[in-house]
Picture 1 (cartoon, rainbow, N blue to C red):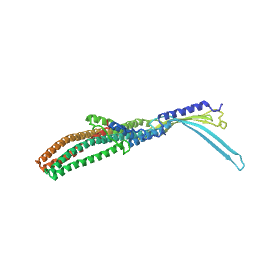
Picture 2: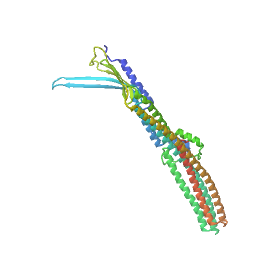
Picture 3: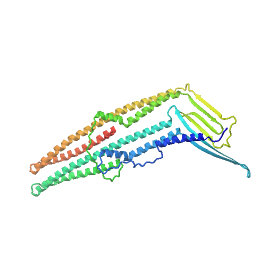
Picture 4: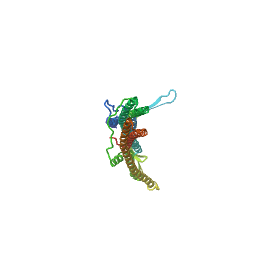
Length: 466
């Protein structure tokens, strides 16, 4: 028998190892290190608009970056888990030395072996590693999706609050300018002894009140800009001046419900959990399958090959192995040629009490629980969206009506100020009208902020930012 190394065997073995490794490296590089800021979208020199800020937040928000790294972590774990189906090649070498007595000869033995192992396929219920991997990936993906909705809705809200404060500052400045004109008139009338000092001071207080409110709005806007920069992952001290107009809600209530049902994270997660539990119920029939175990192989003293079928947990696996001794001179070759061995065991369950029936009943009960929970989640999402939609409409109507209150209050104040110039005003009534104007203006600005916040909450429930 020719016992020299079989070069064709070695070549085929090398190709079997190289091709799967190339496939793995083509799909993903588990050792690649990505720069978390490399895919960030820079803010352009032109005034940023909402789509650009959303794009920048998706790329640069640090919470989203951490969530993406979690997904990459699971993908790396996927490579580890799937490696059990890839070829495993090892080279083992050993040295044994023995010497008896001080001057005895050294008896040594050197041996080496090349071993190839691979799991060919699996059958039966899904492997526990695969189930755990799907669970980890599912949780990571839906956690990332939930984080995206949270971040983008907050970006939308802060962006529109900045635009709203631009309008409010402009209105306050116009109101201050009108009060300054009235202050100049009152100062001139005071110089001519046509108005009292109290009238002049009251006019000055009106100007100072508007200045105070403008300063407060500017500080609030500054804080909103800093938060927006943090949301998009940019230096807090950077300069930013968002542009655009306040966006109305352009979809109706029923459409909002449908969008929310499609995009809700918990509904999506439980839908996949339902499919997973349906698979578990289907796999209960494998509990009645024979428990098989097979070991078969051939060995000629130098070369060996074997096939094994065994059950690990609930999943059967078919494995193969091939070995080649690299020490031709020291290998004992049987005179009768290769040695074959086969061992097959089968255990068929006939009756084991109510274990399998109880297990199947348990899994079906879990399936029904998920189905009920999924229906309840859909009803809950629809309820919250409809309530949020009505709350937004309420805030929108309050802001619209409050605008009319402000216009009327401003006109009443102008009329009473004109009467004061003519010396025909009731001071108590003028003070009441002035207080009503400031209160109406404050309520208007509060209603406008409430409308923006409630629309952002609705968009968060919908997972919708246009």
